[in-house]
Image (spheres, one colour):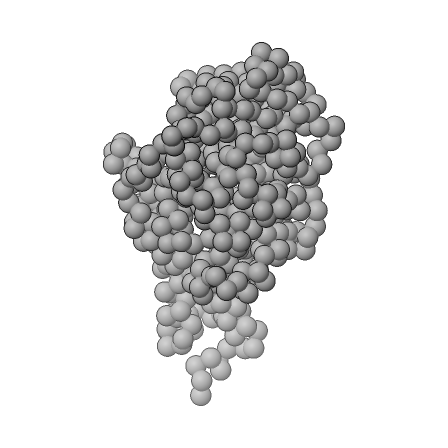
Length: 446
């Protein structure tokens, strides 16, 4: 008689379902571990190619919507770039209905040779629509893109240009994104660890292995002709950066990732702002999954492994609804399955090694990923090892966003439309949390 025959049909269904869910989550965890190992292949500094004989013209695109507390800081940073002024243009596409427009207009008035303001009457296409408007008004061969809350280092463009200038097959060069306000709250401390893990492991692994990856939405230098070749910026998803990246790479364009070249920005300081940002990303990733999965499968240029990794990338947020279902089944599992079976007979079934193995992967993968991340960062500052404790805070944030991210994922798969919800920025940096423009009240930090 089969060991499982002592269980009822419903008990067997619950046992099977929980094991399948554990296995699926375990596959994602094993893939994170694989990416961690692959990321080690790219250790070492990227060598900078020689500069061009003559610096080409570059246009910086800045999409704005009610960014009065950070807009001036970014525009000023762009104007201070160590780049020939006659070769540097800035196009600001502003959809604001607050004082942001006047801030941008002052820069246009003071620097007419470098700054152009385009104020749209509506938010058609949201950020993608703004970037497409900027693209239509650009003649430069190269385009630099910044979100409003970022503060690029002065030598950024000069460091990026040689990488794309000498490689005509490269569509964009991506910097590693870092943060201005890591110590602002427990939320920012935890999120900074996630950002570092993404930059030091995920992006490095995908680049070093030739896998599909995505432009991070800011801090990247593009070849204008590449964007135009694939149809420009599309506004039918909430992650226009991921959408463009996939189209470019499916068309055969390559990218370069430079982990040693960083561009700092602002981390959402509260759970509410994080929820809003994650909701948008989860829905956008699901939209891109639905939009491109057929093209990925049918692509003759992608190996089976690269197709698998492309699916793992686009389905990143599928982990959320799967986890919600798994958590919901836990009390049912321990209520319906007899303790005597779990203590003895269960270990003689195929379910035990499968569930145990994948469960171990789920627990080990984060430690491996973030341990590797902090080991790399600790080469410059040994105090980074102390940030391993922030995994706890990151776990809390992950649990807190499971349900809204699950809802967003289903909406994305069902093509339900929604408004692009911007993440509020405050212009705060770690040095005493000094405000570089405007003021912020303490209630916003809690």
